[in-house]
Length: 336
Image 1 (spheres, rainbow, N blue to C red):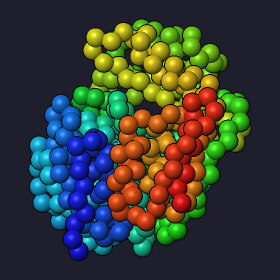
Image 2 (image 1 turned 120 degrees about the vertical axis):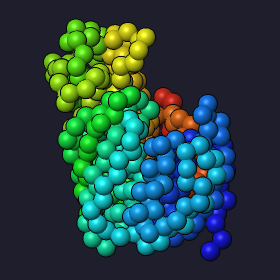
Image 3 (image 1 turned 90 degrees about the vertical axis):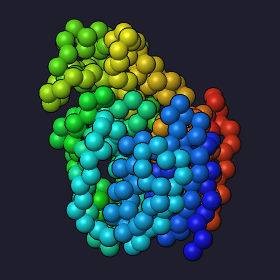
């Protein structure tokens, strides 16, 4: 079968991860050029390379150009096999993004699978463990996906060292998602996650967040040994399974107050938007919507990941997405 030709210059690693997932599901090989072409360090980084190698292992596939810094990759999948797998990124690269790459292929396997993933679990610019556990997987459950993720050791950048275990049950047919209405928030929780850093920093971060998002359910939680600091805001509606979580992580040169304010402001923006689906979750639901063949969500104004992700999906699958304006800057995203 002739490989699909994909230009990776307009997006980041998400284009590659989506292509890997769809190649394993459809059996359609692809050639991607200019991978992460507009990034300051283009080409495959270690976390992207781990996704490629993991896709090869679970599908019996092959990959030409699978090396650090490569800007071109040809991937051919074989048959995805259920099983017990273990992958170590070797850096603080996101275990969450690796999980999301392998999950769609494994839920279409013939039997249950487990994954043990080592690397970062609480990363900037990637879904932290808490988001996967409390927001992403509950949303997928509405589509019929039965999967769970367990945190054994938290891993912050730049040290990494985190460990998660995942279990995926077979789901041969997805149900369409219809996430377009949201009731009022009934519970808001704020958690500061800290490892081997002064509690005063965590306290300043928490106080700054609570000023923006007042709540009685706010706490500081110690993680496993190793330096790191982050804050998560979780909101739940009376639908129970409908949630949003925003997060922000400490970095050198950035005041603790600023870190707390980022996550709280992002949550405040979501609540004020009236959207049913947060900006990050919207991007992550595009693939299951397409695999179901239909669905719709009402989300906040999407970021640049959405059009590039859609472009890859529409190359592999006979679906078309539509994006139209909603009220207060929201967007309807539909697939048919």
